[in-house]
Image 1 (cartoon, helix red, strand yellow):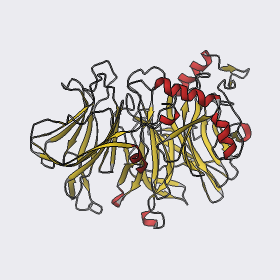
Image 2: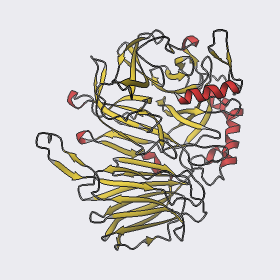
Image 3: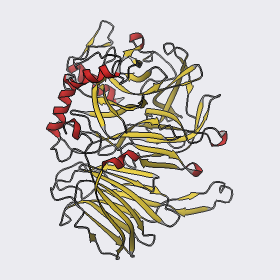
Amino acid sequence: MSRCFTLTVTLVLLGLLTLCDTGRVQAQPSKAPQFTFSEELQEQEKELANNPYLLECKEARRRLASDPFRPRYHFVNPEGGLNDPNGLCYWQGRWHLFYQAFPKEDPRLHWGHAVSDDLVHWQDLPLALFPGPESNCFSGSIWLEEDRALACYHGVGAGTMIAVSTDPLLLNWEKLSGNAVIPMPQGDVPYHIYDPCLWKEGDSYYILTSHFQKIGETKVIRPAWFLFESHDLIHWDYVHQFVENDYFSQVFGDGACPYFWPIGEQSDVSKRRHILLHSCHTYGSAWLLGVYDRQAKKFFPESGEYWNRRGVTPCGIHAPSAFPDGQGGIVVINNMNHGRETPGWNQIMTLPYRMTLLENDEMGMAPVEAIHSLRDKEIAKNNIPLPANDEVVFDDIQGKSLEFRLVLSAAESSVVQMKFFRSPGNEEYTAVNYYPGRGVRHRAPGDMPRLLYGEPEDVIEIDASRSSEEPTSLRASESAGVRANADKTVELRIYVDNSVIEVFANNRQLIAERVYPSREDSCGFSIESRGRDALIKEMSVWSMKGIFDEAGN
C-alpha cells in the first residue's frame, strides 16, 4: 500500500495525474515512445533494426558498461530504474521477460521488454505496456493460449487489467475493454485488488489477486489471495479466498506478485503438487508448495520457504516471475535490490534458474543449463588438501565476473570459509561460509508418531560485512539450510558478477546478495577450513562472457 501511495503523491506533484470533479485520479497519456509494428516476424525484425528506442538502448548500454558495479552476465535493463520482473513466458520458440521500467520521458511504471532464445542472451525490445487508464502498470503475469498472449496486471487507480497480443514478438498490445476487468473495490467487499496472476481450466478463467487479510481479534496481518472466475475475460465473479491453512507465510506479508503453477508429476494424483511463488514488501520472495483441490477451488500449502532470511532491502532477492519449463519444472527469475547509488541504473535480475520437485517434496534449484554457454577460460584443480586453520590463496584465480564449481569434503570441519572479491591484504572480501551439520533436523516422511529425527542439515551463508571499504548499505548475513549429499560432500556453484554473488548448494538451495567491492584489486579468491582438515575434491573456475556484447555493451 505504501508503494501505491508514494507513487500516487509523486505523480500528482509531477503533473502526470489530474483530479476530475468526482475526485478520482485520471491518468494522462504516457510520454514514452510508442510504436505499432507489423504482424509478421520478418517485417518486425526489419522495423526493429532501426527503431529509435532500441538505438537509444544500445547507446545507454555502451555508456554504462564501464560502471564497475554493472554486471556482465546478469540481466540489467538498458538504463534507469528497474523493479519487479513480470510475465516471464515462452512464446513461439522464444523466452520473453517483462519488467517494471521507468522510461526517462515518463517516470511512471511501464512494462519493459526483452527476448531471448536461451534465457541467457537477451535482446532489448520496445516498451510493451503503457499507463492509461491506470496511472501505473504494476506487476502481473502472462497466460498463453494457442493464438494469443494475455497479460494480466495491476493498474494503479483502475484495478485488474488484461492486455492481449498475438504477434510473433509480442510487440503490439491491446487492453481488453479499455478499462479494468476487475475494478478497484468500492464499499464493503470481502476482497482486495493488487498484483494478479491468470490461468485457465476448462472453460473458465481464473484470476488470483494478492493483498493481505486481518485475522483474529487483534487483526494480525497475513498474506491473502482472492480468487475470481470468468468465462469471457471481461465479466468476473468473486469466488473466495484461495489459500487455506497457510502456516508458512510470515506475519505482515502481503502476497504480492503471485505465480501459481503445477510442478512435478501430475499424472499421479497422490503426487500432484502446485507451487505458489510470490513476494511481500517486508520479507521478499517466497514459495508455498501444496495440493490444489480443483473441485473446492482451494490451495492447501504443505511447506514453504523464503529466499531472503532477512529483510527484502537492501541488497536482497525481491519479486519472482515464473513459467513452466515444459519438463515438470518451473523457470524462475527475480529482481535484486541495490545497496548504493549507481548513476543511471540500480537493480538487476538474478540468473534464471529451474525449480523442480524432488523426492519427499523437496525443492530443487539450479541455474538453467544455458548458463554454461557463457563459460570462457577454465582453471581446474582436483584433490587439493585444506590444512586446518590455514588460508589457501589461489593467486592464479582472479576476476570479478566468474563462475565457481566446488565439491568439498569437509564433514569434520567447524566451518569452511571461501573469500570472493578478495583484496590482496584481506582489506575487502565477501565470505561464503559452509557449516556442515549445523542446521535444523528434519523428520523423514512417516516419522510423526515416533518423533524420530534425521541428520541435521548443512548451512550455507553469505557474509558481506567486509565486502567494501566505502559507505554501502550492507546486508546482514544471509544463510539457508541444505541437505548434504549421501557421501557427506557438498557441491557449490557460485557466481560472482561485479556487484552480485549467487550461491547454489547441492542444486537444492539458493542464496544471493548484492555486494559492492570498492577496490580495483578486490578480485582474488581463497579458502580455509577451520578446526579440522578438509579437501577440495573438485574445483573448476571459469571467466564469464558478457551477454550484451552484440548489443553494444
